[in-house]
Image (cartoon, rainbow, N blue to C red; front, side, top):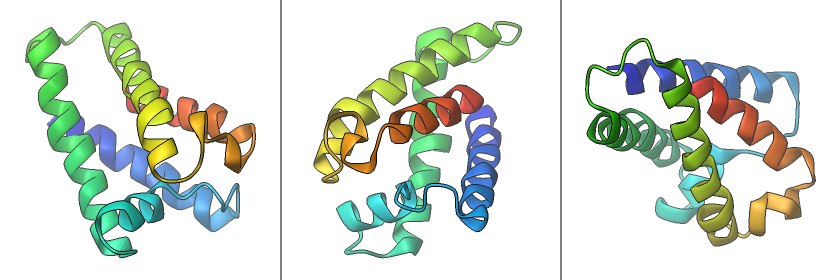
Length: 119
């Protein structure tokens, strides 16, 4: 449940970021859609929720236990680990380069901030 709530919050931030025109070149939903859905934003959103709510939620519970409440720092450490995987594996696969540097220096900084909020 916490993974779902965190994904909803992160999604709201991503939506607001997009509406404000902040770093439009950093569009994780489109990146995911391009990688697995032939460019479909709908597939990108579905996969975003599957990764955040299901995969990361279950992985967090498996590592720290389902009752890890009260230890907010565990969520931040976990989310930074997820960010590192994204930066080292997924960004290059999406064509954005290591740490998303093809999108500029703000890409890794902004995605780190979003992951910490998720955590």
